[in-house]
Image 1 (cartoon, helix red, strand yellow):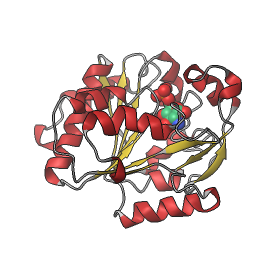
Image 2: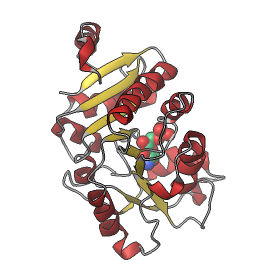
Image 3: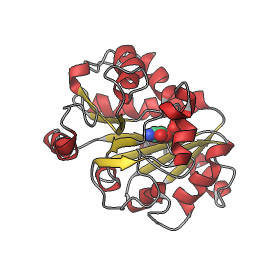
Image 4: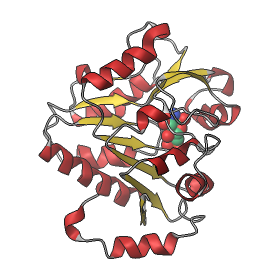
Length: 256
Ligand code: GLP
């Protein structure tokens, strides 16, 4: 089962996950990170930024990207990754890929898969979760074996993400995302969620049946998953007390 860590606030979550990334990079200076966008992973990037880690040999792959935004649009995930991750962390942008960044959409999925494979896979994949249970942009119904491909966003996701755009009409209808099968090949998955709005999706992902109807539940198929949630996002977890006990008695040598 996933290790579920319930933390008091987002800053604590950020420090905890930054510890895991720091340990990874110390052990493997050319580590491959899977970076996520959205507001959820921001505390991790902030915590990492304060540590001055040597990241010059690290490579990174983003999970997903909108399709159809004008080049350089500030809400494209390429721009968000640059603003929130590469610039503040001093990561060389040439070592960071975003799906679809080669321009040729028809072959972008295969290209991205090949690039991840050439990098020998992702060591640690950060994940947020949508209120409908999506990870990356794998909307409900996505095959558990899916690979990087073009998808159509649900209305719920478009509404959720409209806050980043001037109006709902400006939110793209299409995206390109790593598939669930792609994500499951990363060696360590770290899923973060904060707030009451994510409680149902988290309960489904961690404790519900494994189903394409709730793509986040695919994490149950992975042998090394860490779920870091605040009290509100943990509020619908039936086994919350057990997770607290497990974490309180976790052997120190274990790490995340
Ligand atoms: C977006 C992204 C996901 C992200 C999710 C949650 O649509 N494609 O990668 O995890 O929605 O976003 P947020 O963290 O802002 O709640």
